[in-house]
Length: 143
Image: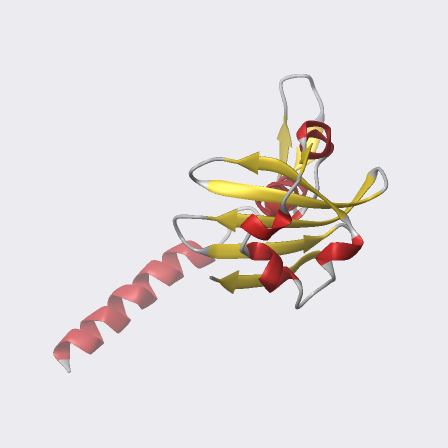
């Protein structure tokens, strides 16, 4: 009981010290701003949105992947196709390998020159992500 009272008292003292404002005319802006080296002003809110977009960048189909993708001659070797069938029909598209290394494999499903779907298999985790060019991430499965 004494510990609880001590914690409550310490918190009250800390909060009372932080709550007062010396000069009421000095107000902080609602969204802090940051001046970059080239003189542009960028709000921190915009910066956090950009970071979240970059974090979800793997849920997009990038032009670089399309440029480097090679056509698949025998799609039966790719286990992710059976799981992709839950979301779309892989046979309806030209399948290309954008990346295949010991860590992951990226397959693109092309309609002409445009990628429609993408699968990302993270091999060491057994995780398959299915991405639509329209909707982003549409499926995630352990295989």
